[in-house]
Image 1 (tube, helix red, strand yellow):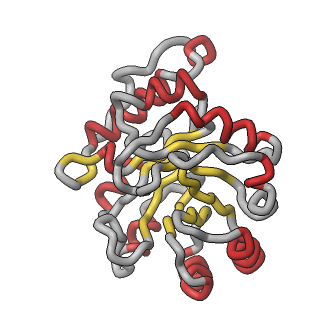
Image 2: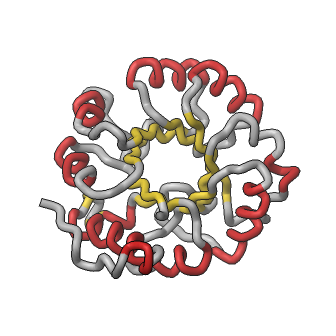
Length: 227
């Protein structure tokens, strides 16, 4: 089944609402100055509301190693998602210092990467996330480059997830055409800048409905409900 990460949560109520659904991980933006940046005063309560078995992801962008390690030490995230220009050397050092899973975000609107282009990152990262040049903007990119990224990542056994402008009405087409290992959404499950339970529910339904119908024994549209 395609993995699902819902991102950009800022309230305990929204965390509790979303984590009732069959998702893989939930993300918290730790980038100073962004609209969805989480309040450090509220973060502990939000993290405590995440059920066991669901991955807690910190979204970072060009954070200093000191900050990244301090946040990881204090909050014990399961994944650190690196959205900036972090180098292979940065990833190596961070991996050795904190030991948790690293997801490196790549600009998928640029020329698709080759196996050689991933070789220096591959030993230190655990997942690739393809996003548009302006990650977090809700803008999509040309999906036709996805297969080349998947081919390059396969050489190193790295899962390829996709973000960038996803929402309930296009995520099904993405999955059917390109079969990413997972999808990541933030603005696509919001209305007027706030998390929308209906859109969250619909997004998860569409992801599930785009999987193997035979294995599941039928569609899933309409079977999920956030209470």
